[in-house]
Amino acid sequence: MKKITVSAPGKLMLFGEHAVVYGHPCIVTAVDSRMFVTAEVTSSGSFELNAPDVQIKDYIKPTNEIGNGEIPKGAQFIEVAIKNVLEKYKKKLTGFSVVTRSEFSSKFGFGSSSASTVCIVKALSELLSLKLSSREIFDISFKTVLEIQGKGSGFDVAAAVYGGTLYFVTGGKVIKPLKIKTLPLIVGYSGIKADTVKLINKVSRKFDKKQKRLNQIYDDIEEIVERGRAFMLSEKWEEVGILMDANQKLLKELGVSIEKLDNMIYSASKSGAYGAKLSGAGGGDCIIALAPNSKRKAVESGIEKAGGTILSVRTNARGVKVEK
Ligand code: PMV
Image 1: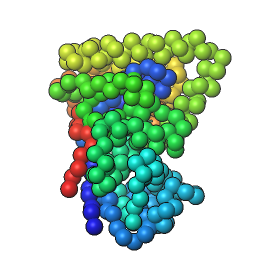
Image 2 (image 1 turned 30 degrees about the vertical axis):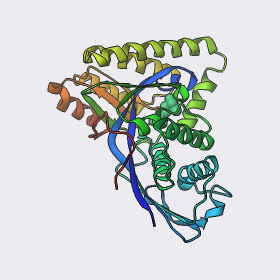
Image 3 (image 1 turned 90 degrees about the vertical axis):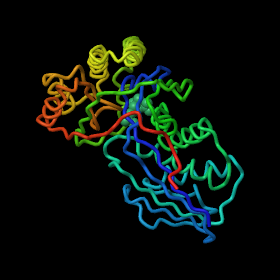
Image 4 (image 1 turned 120 degrees about the vertical axis):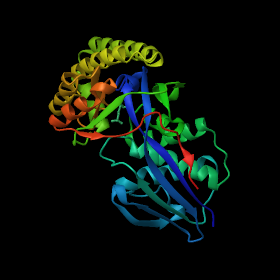
């Protein structure tokens, strides 16, 4: 029966995290480490899932039970996405087998859950001849992620669908590709897994009685995003670096940076980076640094000396696509 493999890229937040959850813009780039999903329509009467990266082995249930009952954590995004597509487009499956494979660890914070959600929606669009547009794939994938996580802006879903580097506003109100040829980015992994929703909640608790200051921080972040966008388009990397430092300062005030990230960022800057910041929710995951080519090696070893691992990824990667 019909079988397809689809892939989608991971992502890195360049500017605007946290503020983007509350109506402000951000800039995100897709990275060339990809998630792959192979899906096959079968006649077995059951839904089967193997997702070794998230410890799901031979998970099986009747197709008419998709989305019902207790769903193990690693299966949630794929299974709820399938349920949402079948419900919205009034389709049924005689049987369905799904296997996922990732080129990157789900610990990096590259958005493996969103990328696998986007892959399965695209796979179903092809297998059931739904001809979904990118916008439709974004909308149903974002709805799925929100149903499971409860919170989030959808920037990671947009990166997986559209690829490239995007100017993005909460919930996909604006999704605008930025034509950027190069981005001399260095990525350092902290070795610590971050919990996005916990960190979003931590910020709102911390500023419970300081709403005015919180709104001011979000407005300042928005200004950084707008200026960052212009400087990136004109390839003024030194200025982009200065804005990264300014964004990091505000993230620190939000309370989402940690000592390990601070040390990696400090070390990157001391080794000659134009600027550096955490990327994503904070609390762990990755830092990004921008450096001239002549300083790249020095910055990389600076980050390593502070305990980080360099992840060599290319930015501006292609969005979701059919592999075969
Ligand atoms: O933790 P990550 O890498 O998924 O980034 C989260 C960024 C937030 O702005 C805190 C949340 C969001 O969905 O935009």
